[in-house]
Length: 519
Image (cartoon, rainbow, N blue to C red):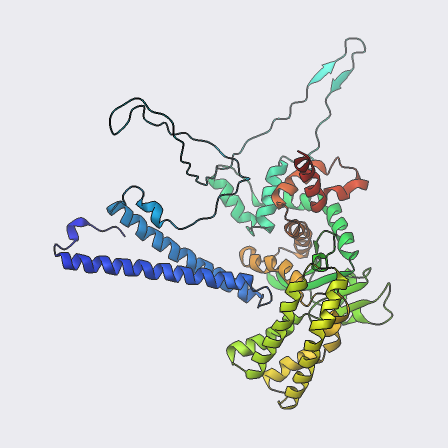
């Protein structure tokens, strides 16, 4: 808050005390800001820590608190700068180091003309010594426009037949929305988690009248148009040797009440064992969490599957399953989390020791991440296997000392009852220790559902699963989902069905980067 000079005391000692108090408050804010930044960075870096929705909400709250503190500190500094401007050059000495702006962003050069005469002696004999460049990041407001597609007609003077240019293909048959607008609506709804009613209000503020029903019609038509790409991603995911599986709740409106549906995520990520196949995520919707749903989703899959201990998966692990067996690989992050909660909340010595031992295994995993399966297997056999064997002996010994009702005993039982699935990574270099790939895939849904509240129906849930499949796959391949959607919606109607795989995010990215690399 700016000070009114008329209210300041005349006593110099009082003024000094006020200045010292102000500086102390500023230092305190800076320290608190630094502490919050460090806390948030640690939580984001903690790849094997708690990754539940509760943790995501905590990060959101911390970042909101950080934003408020930074705004308060900035407001105070700005007010001080207005009252007591710093001498020329002094502000550079106290300016903190900042990250350079992205060099890939386009630059607009604005030259501020220098005076023609010297400001010190009045001479006009000036010679350019150099230039100082200060960059600011700017945002250009979006522009709305109507594209008028003009198709000329000609008549032949010989045969008197009329010739007309064929109509261009539209993303939606007889639709009036362009691909960029459709991509914006889809991106805002499923990536930025802005419901259609909020988007309609934002567009109305810009003078564009778009009803919710109109945009809902666009979303449904786009989902149908993009369905072949979803099927291609499904083929790609289920062709993997190993997949990750997880699910999350989805509120669904049904007959005037809200029920709980499920979005199931199946993720292919071969990067941890050096695989060259592109990562991809496939989502399926189901109205319940019954085991029949993953059995239906994975009816054609056989191979390794990393998942939590949900009993609905048990039917997938049966011997002699057709078309082939699915081998279970348990998630050590889930097992660790049960000990971590007890270590943090109750300071239980057994839980603290268990977390310490499991963290030693994860430290080895970080070292071998990205190495081929044979190299990972050799290191695990040499370094991880003795630690796991010692951990089992220790856990069984501690379990004998505990009552079956003790929380620590339940955490131990969770691991020991599934020990073959937990230790399977020791004999197969393709397996990861955690199921974090699937948890990361469903995190966006968990974070976003507090914005969009519920799906309107089961069909809305299936539609959401399709679009989440496309957007999450774009994220995994470092592809701008909005740019990809806009380009694919332009091309897909005229693209040969046999070459639909060319439009998948990773192939699309490779095709666009090839000319740039050649240049």
